[in-house]
Length: 306
Image (tube, rainbow, N blue to C red):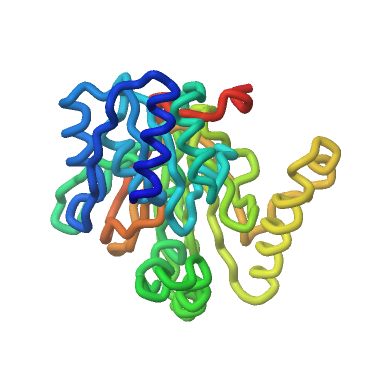
């Protein structure tokens, strides 16, 4: 914290800004309460020092407000920062960009989660919402190990989650199309598509296209998992990054299906764990999720505004 305060003090002076206000999050309140307090004091920019969960909480509070959000990536994944192509692990550059950069409008994912008792709660998300393996992996992640070794802590959690043979049985509707039924291992709804290690899970996703990109994973064995890995690592991660490479992408396989739309509703046959931007959000019996186009303003370096 002292290092952050020193850099902020220097940058605010150089930019001619007023005195910075400081707020600390807690386990009980990851950011919404502090953000409301900051908004009440008339702030015009909020610098979020934390991971995707903290950014999500703050974004939920500033939704559609005339306030800019600047990121100081400090978490395990920092997926929003990665998808915005922001610099990671460079305190000085991140804070300098906050004070000297430009505003960019990006989409905000919104979701209503229906619980077993019939109650419905609404949240925002910026990166991805997931059910199945995605959420079970988080449930099995050791927080203490995560703090020590970062994303490597997920390896053990993935192995544990893969032993769960229970599939999701769902009915879903995309936009105004007919209701479909299927079984899936995992369902991930994304506002943007890149994961850690430059893995491109959702190759057509963009943070400002007004659409959700959804992947349905339905592996039935080793061959199916091999197809998924090939599609995600090779085709998405390599071929999809160039115009020429995209011409060589193969057709979809049964184990991996992509769909896109602005409104997605889903009902599961039994309560299932759900995660938003890397945080557990309990169990859901149904969800309704949509895009609010360009409802969040983020600060990006001036040289990357194009």
